[in-house]
Length: 258
Image 1 (spheres, helix red, strand yellow):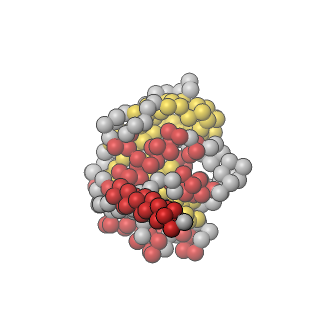
Image 2 (cartoon, one colour; image 1 turned 45 degrees about the vertical axis):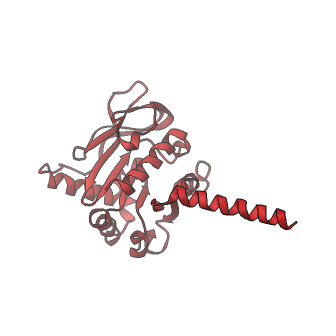
Image 3 (tube, one colour; image 1 turned 30 degrees about the horizontal axis):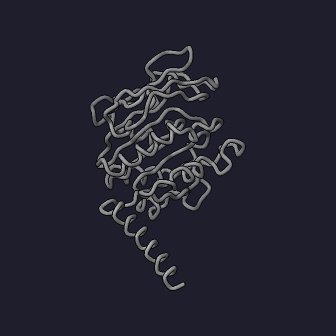
């Protein structure tokens, strides 16, 4: 009996040592998945924020928390952002409800502290994303005419989209082949944003134009902003394996690619 107990203890100790060695020198990435909370439960029973948490918690180097517009401080208080390395933003209909002080706080943490910001699909209308795009454009001497982040045309056509890798050597594209999203909302250009530092993914809808801006990356102060176009709360896009790979790669790059 004593020998069996000793063997079990040794096995546990060996496992802990192996895990420690694997993570040595690699800090855990603190991810905050934020959503306005309007996703249909039939598609995302726990919301898109909950889906992100479920997906990312299987990654050994990530610690994930969720937040919503309905939370205290709209889920964006100083303490929460100060303990976030990468913020994932999902929104659709309630963009204007995000308080100006929270918008400013997000921008400050990206620019001054290096927090990564991932804007998903309809988050092109998120106030922090729009403000960051406006600032980047002005810094580049190419101010935007009209609303920052606006697409030329948006239609919910439930069409498939082929996603191609435009920058295969970039870490966000690591291990990701060309793939198809079976159903998504269609966003047609022009996309009113400053030129991206890197265009990582480009896509085309079935029967539509080529060259969509599906994965764009900008440097902003000490941080990075990554926009990923495929999505819509009415389709399980974020549960797709290839999309998960894109988001995992993006989180790691935004957290460590400063």
